[in-house]
Each structure stands twice: as structure tokens, then as C-alpha cells.
Amino acid sequence: MAIVMGLDQHRAQITADWLDTETGEVSRRRISPAHRAGVRAFCEQFRGQQLEVALEATTGWRFVAEEFRRVGAAVHLAEPAETAARRGNKKRAKSDRADARHVRELLMIGRLPESWIPPDHVLDLRARVRLRHTLSHQRGEWQQRIQAVLYHHGCPQRSNLMTSEGRSWLAARPLAPAAREQITIALRVIDALDRQLGPLDKELRAYARRQRGCKALMGQFGVGELTAVTIVAELGDARRFSSSRDAVRYAGLDITVHQSDKRRAAGQLSRQGPPALRWALFEATMCAARQRSPDYDYYSQAAERLGSNRARLSVARKLLKRSHHLLRELGEARWLPHDPAGARHALRHPDAPRPAPRPLLPPRSRGRPL
Image 1 (cartoon, one colour):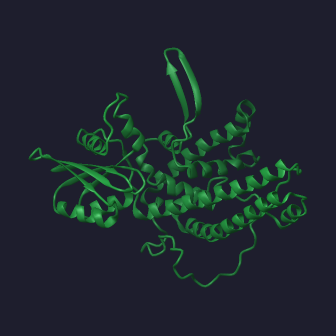
Image 2: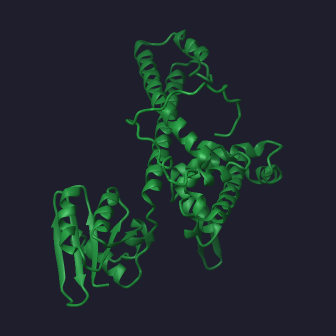
């Protein structure tokens, strides 16, 4: 490698520290403002040279990596938490230059904790999946706010408040003006979220029905279209995990352990991974309590010893391991489109013209997997 570079990225500026391995010269530069045009102008001086670049996987890394790849550089994405841990606990000067130099030195000695850089279409799919997860989570939070207002004013607890019958029941409650205003605004926000979730769900379900990796995952009990597309998007290249246990750790479903000498204390879930992936796996395992589930016996035994929630987490780990093996066996087809030309691979942009509507399908039966 002729030039080795480390980057420390922020919204206002990017600090670059690079070493020419042939001359031993160390150079530094600050790119400000930190937008695409500024990064592109900076990268042009390295066109045609052998360049290795390392930066942390923080917000904004994608466009920086794209610009360096455009001039032929090899880009390495560092995992932020592991990168910081390899600095050590000793107190020392903390600056942008020191951070850029630290990343560059880790790359030079081969100790950079690298993250996988997905292809563009996987990044786009992952962004849509996480957007849907965020909107759905916000919708649930607003529903909880309504329940909190009702309880605060002594109203009886009731589920299914978003149905027409539930909304009529809400309108008939004798509430103070401030409480009525809270509920009215919450319902409006939920309706707005539903208008955004509807088309997004439709696009993701259509993608899952034509993508080979998703169709393979949907062969498992409890895995529907939304959960399958979430697992495919978040796991990405299953071959990057040396074993299914690594996939469990990536998802954040592993149990933290503190061990010293003869003392060993099990902790909680690490939760060091994509929240959308954990949601999809837990949703799929909600079906494990059904008697026709292949994991019913395992779930029942675990629930008797540990409780239903911890039993579902155990089933979620089994489901993730099976999904990992399924995607590995598919090879490259795990994320390739059904259409060989790739015309239908990318999800349609929201502003793109929509095709003619198809006849409405019958309503989904209650209890069908997501």
C-alpha cells in the first residue's frame, strides 16, 4: 500500500491523516465543509495512486466511501466501539487529528476492526426497512400515550382503540379539555403515520415475494414478508459470519457474561446490533406458542423454566441460526433479484410514477405472520 489514510468525520468537517509509505511523509488536512463536493475535490489529488482509506461507521460514511472509491481507493469501514476500545483506558489527548491518526495506525498494523460494507442496493433496502421500523415504533409510542392519558383520568383499560369502535368509545369518554386535546392530536399523528406506513409496507412485501432469500426464509414457521425482508436486509452477506453464533452476537441476542476466577454472573441481552433485526426475530417467534409450531416443545419447556419472554428469545436465536444457514446455502442468490437484469431489484422511489392499480386482495386473516 503506497498511501494509508485515516479519517475522522463530523458534520462540520473531516480530518484526514495519511502516510506515504514510500517516502515516510505524514500529511494532514481538514476538509470543510464536510459535504460531497468538498470531499470529491479532496479525493482528486489521489486519483491513479494506490490508496487505502479507513473511516469509522458513523453517520455520513456512505458518501465519503463513494467518493474515495470513485478515484480507485480501497475503503475500510471501522466499527466505532471496537476502534475506541483499542485506544485503551489510559488518559491521553483527544482531538480529531489524534482520532484520524489512530484509525490510520490500526489499518497499517492490521488491527482495524472492520465492518462489512454492503452493496448499494442492500444499503437502500436496509434504509427502507429501518424507516418502516422507526415509523411503526413511533406509532406504538403514540398509542401508549393515549393509554397513559386514559389511565391518568381513571378510565377503564381497553385495547383495539384504533378501530372504529374503539375510537367511538374514546369519543364518548368524559375527559378534561386538555386530555381531549392530547388524545385528538395523538390520533391525528397515528393517522399520518398510517398513511406513510401503508405504501411502504406494500413495497417491502412485494420485494419479499420476488426475492429468493426472502422466499427461502418465509418457508420457516412464523416468518412472513416483512420479517423476511428485514432479516435479509440486516444480515446481508451471511458468509461474513464464521458461524451462526456470530450472527446471534451481531443481532445483539447474546447474553453478556462477567466471569472472574470461579465467579460467573450472566447478565442481560447485549443489544449491540440492529434493533429492526431483533424486532423481526421476536415477532416471528410469537408464533412459537402455537401447537403446530415445530419449536412448540422447545418453547414450552423453556417457558416453564424461564418464562415466556426468555423462551421466545431462545427460539429467536434458533430462528436466526436457521436463517443464517439458509442464506449461506443460497450463495449469491440470497440477495440477487428475481429478475436477472436487475430491473426490479431496487425498491421504487416514492416520487416515481406508480403502475396501474391491481384488484384488491381479500383481507389478511388474523394471526398471519408479518
